[in-house]
Length: 418
Image (cartoon, rainbow, N blue to C red; front, side, top):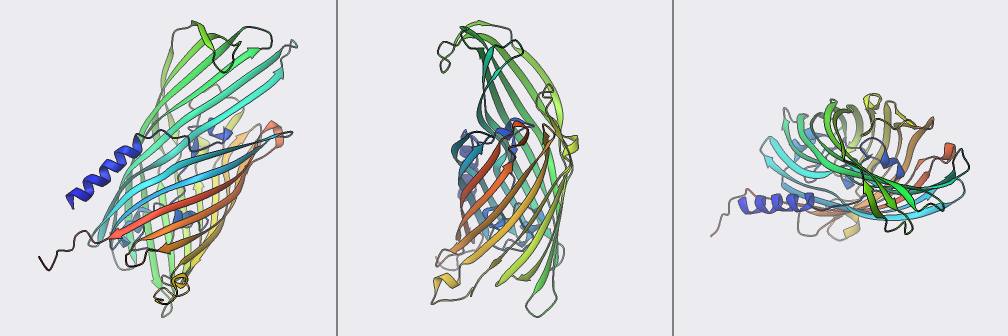
């Protein structure tokens, strides 16, 4: 057992050390990046619904669900993203491959403990903007960003009764974000380069309740409630401004640098409340909905001199479910597969150039059991649209391919034979 835990911890450390640009969204420039907490593949392929009990898979959307684990679970996931960025007169395409989460769940009788690591936010973009200034000079500005914030968490769930469980996550957020801008005037050899580096860290909590009750011989109702209070993130900023030779823009040569400009401040990491309801039979089908309210109005940017963006309270609603033809079928493998589908709508609460940034998506996926084990492979697909072409903004059309391994086994069973 100790060996297995050491291996899991080593994988967490390795995952934390891997630099990744797991977004291609220009909207990741704002705030502390694009928020990546969307749940396990099982939940994402149901529109982000996380109200159902599962004894073998880890449900990151509600820590109270951890209490349902009956076997030691190891979950790891990655995804590949195809994005088309559409401006008013042109479009570009981008691709990203990234890890999504790594976690271990340990059942402890009426309770379970879960620990893991996943991206919390991500920054990854490159934008080139050409324009004529007020004096008629043609200017070119290239902006890029990379990095993000990770979430290292430890969670605990406890079953108060057969129908009711509670749980809590303790989160530590940490990471770095670097943004670079290079601006120059056509025909002028020297331009200006600015590099901003932000080191971000802070703690947070997530509390959860789950309830399920049989209302017929086979079918049950499900309810889920989570609350994440707002928290403070400490941001240490360093700005480097330099005059550079831009005859070769792709390889600027620094000719004069100013002293670094440093600052430290705190921003509010927004709190949120999520409420979900569902109906179904755990071994046959389930349909549910989840509504999330985020207090983004208290949110802010890494740097305070960004004037074209504001934040309002955000809302997200998801609808989805699953179907298993015959969970104990021995003659037909596809009867044991879990088929999932869902849809979601989100008003992110970000307002840029007086335009609300919204996200629409549809999802579907398969849960493929691994014969002879308690494990399964989950494959998912997401298609959606974020943003708008209005007010000189960019509309993103994305297609995500998701895959996860949910490996479950009994670690604490004593051998009966030597």
